[in-house]
Image 1 (tube, one colour):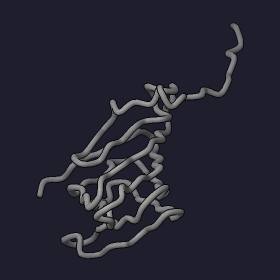
Image 2 (cartoon, helix red, strand yellow):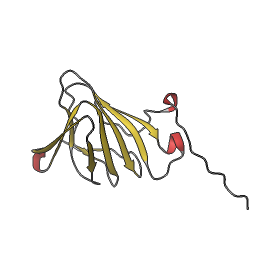
Image 3 (spheres, one colour):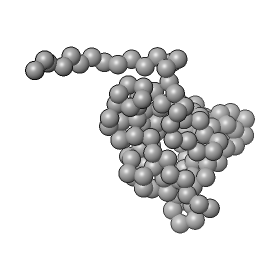
Image 4 (tube, one colour):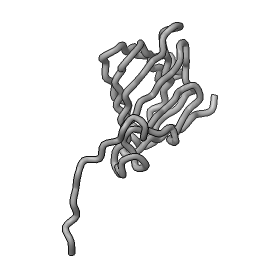
Length: 130
């Protein structure tokens, strides 16, 4: 049996795709995924939202999620009736556990919010009913 040759896979900016799970008002682009790099246990992408955006309530199924704020200020609402929250700014990291309902908000009325987001095993977005 021939030995498999392993090598890193570079995904160029022109190769990222928005053909991934989405929610209204947020643009998710996959950098490292099954489709772009043959990844089977991780998704890494960039998520952008416009000024004042507030997502619908959602969770990420069985995926663990890590986020890093590249640009802007964010608020994550959670808990009963989404009354609890944490605020983040550029340079902050966050971990969101699997199946954890939350709402993501851009705290600026003028600037976009940009996240670097990693999920394992894939980009799962399950939008919840109001």
